[in-house]
Length: 424
Ligand code: E4P
Image (cartoon, rainbow, N blue to C red; front, side):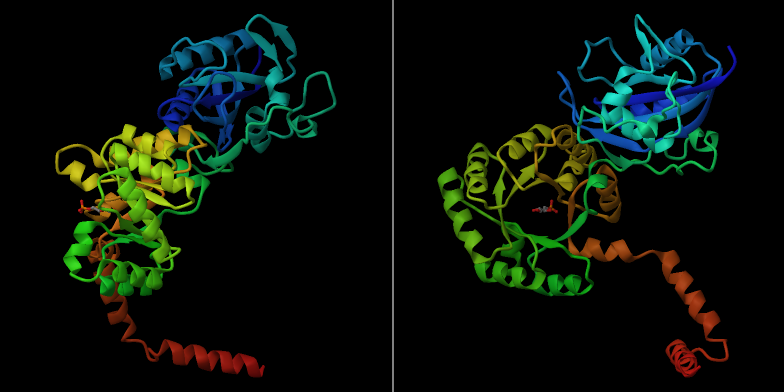
């Protein structure tokens, strides 16, 4: 048969989901008899049936010279290459490649019905498809995809990012289609990563706060002790300055003591977040305080399973200490990636990943890439985020060149221009 258009649906709910989707698309790009035309954004959707992981879905429009059976065989081969294991229907899978529609073809038969019955019924199939190909005609009818009524099965499907960064696909897809950018996991669904200052030093907090980029502060007993000032006064003053979440840590070791200290600390200011260590008593105290409506930052987290437990206990934040792991040759950033993935798998967990024990600007970029909700940064590191020798030398050169122009006074020149324009 001659080449015709085909619409494919891609889905993944296990492991590195965006990588699985990207790999499947790249393998399709290389397959004989396939030309990629349009790729939708990545959409997230809640799992159906037995599946537990949140799905990442996308739609892909191709031109293909394959028959329906031939294309189905190709899709199965690519699923196997990506690493899919045989699994029952409606369970989690690393990759799912479905043929949703083929130009002019209507068929029902074992293993393949076209158009796919789910295309019109399921939001995770129809919404990505509408994004790239609303004009596709439903065979045997006058209607196209855009004429279909809203899908019956709703899984909260929403776009979360664009697939494929700098790959062969970027060149394979014509420029008219969305330009590839890396898919930003988790935080692409919410606001930008917050920056907390990791200090109890009021001068540092005032200075950083004046820059207008600080969202909150974290302290711990060591940081408070270092300042040699009254603990509660210090917390109160920090809250006054930042007007955002300020972590104040309990020091009791039993859950009753933690709850008592936590309830009292929460009364110091509405901005206080009670910081509790990740012990059994800490988990128990977190549950009690969270049920009281008090925000808890569960601290001293060094493995992903601890983070799962803290989230189940209702923590508002989990603080994995990445620098202290790096010190032991254990990859701290990988822990952030793991926790972000776990929380993303279970949208009913509302805990924010607060990357702590950050040592340098690279850590900040890495945890932002991993999708951490917050990074808490010492003041010395915060200053380093700004510095780059090429910025300094570039600015020096700009100023030297500008000094040679006849009228170097920018403000004066703009004021004169505006006054002249107002008179016209
Ligand atoms: C913040 O909540 C932590 O207490 C802090 O980031 C620990 O950092 P450190 O490992 O540099 O002491």
